[in-house]
Amino acid sequence: MTSRVGPRTVSPNGTDFKPREKVAPRYQMNASLKSEVRKLNWVHLLIWLLVAAQVIVSHFDLVSHDTVSVPYQWEYPYLLSLIPLLCSSLSLPNNNISYLVISMISAGLFSVAPLIYGGMEMFPVAQQLYRHGKAYRFIFGFSAVTVMYLIMVVAVQVHAWQIYYMKKLLDSWFDATQEKKKK
Image (cartoon, rainbow, N blue to C red; front, side, top):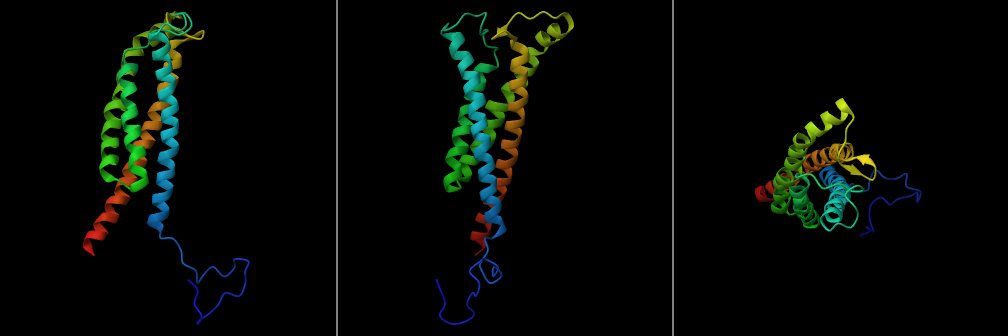
């Protein structure tokens, strides 16, 4: 809305920014945190698709087990990590605190816990591979335990950052609702 009285902007090149309104820092932080969570959700979806592809290909015998090995036990519960992904995606458009809390709790249960179990499950196989050089499961000619540990390293980092950014976002939203209640 323009004012007919008072100081008018003289230069159209943007050097007169001081009298203009600025976005409050909490809204800037909210937008940047949402953006980070969305990016991490896409990476999480990519990791989930890789694990799901291995499980589906192995389960339906689409290729021989020499090409893609039988999945480890931790991969089946990891497929449930789609639940926190969907909850966080549903929470972002409307700043829904309850979906974000469900997403954070289920990320620990369905994303991080299977990865911890998988690390322990595959450790003896990895130990045998690196001590004796013997691998019994392969994914496209590579040792399955090596490939899955690489995926797990990336997945742990993605889930840790997701939980961190969701916690910051939850704090931001909670503070905003508390300010509304005070008014």
